[in-house]
Length: 319
View 1 (cartoon, rainbow, N blue to C red):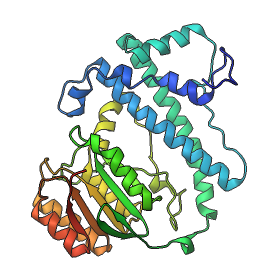
View 2: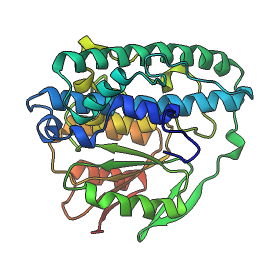
View 3: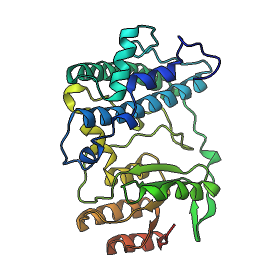
């Protein structure tokens, strides 16, 4: 806690973090839930609900800041359930949720109230964004194609999207890779996906808040349309979303309008040739250059072909 805060006063961000608990404290069953087909128990439900809460908190803060910057006046997020309080009973409830020791019923009530709060705040943000979307002016003139190197590979991009496989075997390499890419491509947009299963198209969507030169940041298609509520299994909604490599690739092209993709993946999950052809046609039609980085395993032949036909490359390099 910053030194400027008293012991009975909690900043809004700190309070929300306390209210939503701690991923680390709720991780005992994450291995089961992470596989998608594993058993959902109280702890894993709490953990993956928490991950969704963390994403919503950050997403809403970034959108609120952008609204404030655009209109020249702060846009405060009117939290009520998540507003700071000195109520010891509620503080203790939140601590128990953070520890993973809250009863199933109480945890469910807390998750439900939190989701309702987020949806109410989302509606207010969306209403303001709808107004600003109509008056926004493009800054496309600032879009510049940049040439740089990622390890030994020369990469050219105006909008570089980076898709990172954060499955357990690949996660240890990600900090070094982020640092390497960030040296020359400071505006690269990173998306982490749990795995690289490429078998079917779905209605999952990735939503972005990072501004992109020439793209209106306030249009509804760039933002989550509704916060899933308690009866809609938000914990599994989150895991389906963040494991969808196909959606991450397509959304980076169609929503972020990336002209180049750097895809770091181990290709140990299943793939479908018809789907790979669909992805390839989309990327080639939009003139997206595809760079594929794998540590040792050779990607499927259709992905090799896509990289070469797009003007990119398949990179087999250990980090």
